[in-house]
Image (cartoon, rainbow, N blue to C red; front, side, top):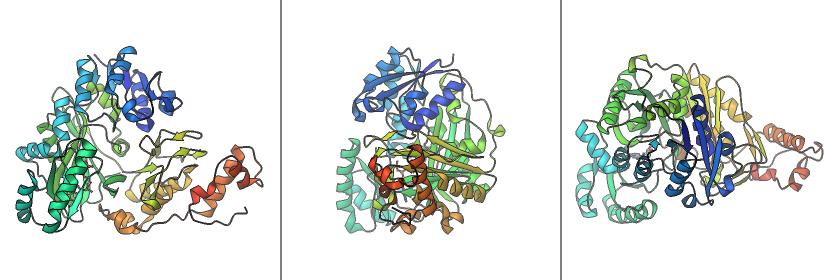
Amino acid sequence: MGIKKLLVANRGEIAVRIIRSARELGIRCVAVHSDIDRKCRHVLAADEALEIGEAPPLKSYLDMGRLISAARASGCDAVHPGYGFLSENPKFASMVADAGLVFVGPGAETIALMGDKVASKEVMRKAGVPVVPFLSGTGEVCLKKAEKLGYPLIIKAAAGGGGKGMRMVSGPEQMQPALEAAGREALKAFGDGRVFVEKYIVKPRHIEFQILADAHGGIVHLFERECSIQRRHQKVVEETPSPALSEAVRAAMAKAAVKAAKAAGYVNAGTVEFIFEEPGSFYFLEMNTRLQVEHPVTEMTTGIDLVREQLRVAGGEKLGFAQAELSRRGHAIECRVYAETPENNFLPSAGKIHLYREPAGPNIRNDSGFGSADEISTYYDPLISKLVTYGATREEARLRMLSALKEYVVLGVNTNIAFLIDVIAHPEFAAGRTYTDFISRFFEDWKPKREKMEIALACAEYCRAHGSPAAAGLSAAKERGYDPWKELGPFEIGIDK
Ligand code: ADP
């Protein structure tokens, strides 16, 4: 059958990314947007666009009824949810199916099962996939059994996600208050107050496997990604292959990942996440039932377009390859470029982008949703782009990333580019000693120190773009509402004011 017209129920870089692959398959794309997103890149990239409501996500991108109506009104036969928003909402998946449309993702039951961290762990344990030792039940039960599991422990929300609401507990005296607080937090954030307790793995890595499965029993993995560089349990830098895995452990994890996906009755693209403890122990954390933010590193090293496969599989086709036909070459690293202030607890930054200059060159990919004069809104995730570099070796990819980041100029909003440069340049990162505590350990007191040349260059470019002579320089920029000191933070540079 095949999909003919697709509603892309998302915004920003991922909506643009989906539209690109769909277009290659000859699928027409309909973008949706809130009132403030009228001129966004994803709207311009699509064949058609429909306004679905006001800026707050609940009134637009999270409004299931309006999205279904938009799909119907524009004659779409399928809906791609992207990541975030409604991508892991079983109710939305079933509403899409009930409207006679194809949901580009697994079935609603699979999403619901994997969205429950406790239920999914039970399924995996039964299927023989190693899981982190955990306790569930009432607070009292957890408290009693916690001693046996041994401290430190971590409390998580059963319905959790996005690294929210996790609490580390180092001794029994902290348990009761932590359980209560976590329960309250979980109820507020996810509308479900159930929490559970898990063994806290000390000095772990986050390693996940990409899965693709069709509706005809075909299932493959596309190797691993390591995503240990995290802030507040959220990924910032991802790479493949993981510098930590031996071939034997990699093969064992791949086998467990495929087993996990089969146990979940999986169809479409999904990711099995593991927590990894050296030298070779690994435990199932959760399965993400959607396209991951970090999927490009897999694409760069396998040559497979994951969105294309998602669309083909959702259209009823078989996977185009068997496991034995898949191989991986070289190394890829992704940096998430955010509008945020790393030195101020990664506080999101919003505003107009005055100057946007992207890096380019061989083996550099930048999945971006923004450009000059675009607005970063406080209503949405502050991700600007995902910068990906490829190299024959990890070191080649790393040096290319450093060079690409130094070429990347975004002025008008604060970004984490200077922070990412220091992360990628760090000797521990260079050595592949990437553990989940990397940022909190080495970057707790980080402050920006951008190169004078870079800033001077960016200012000069701003002046050129706005037709002011270089001598008029910064004052002209300031007059037009652009404050270079915002980009520099508290740092002084030696250019003539
Ligand atoms: P979420 O769904 O909110 O993203 P996850 O369960 O996937 O939560 O965990 C996110 C991150 O939190 C992991 O990548 C890891 O860094 C940390 N983490 C989760 N569980 C544990 C654990 N049991 N021990 C140590 N760190 C953990």
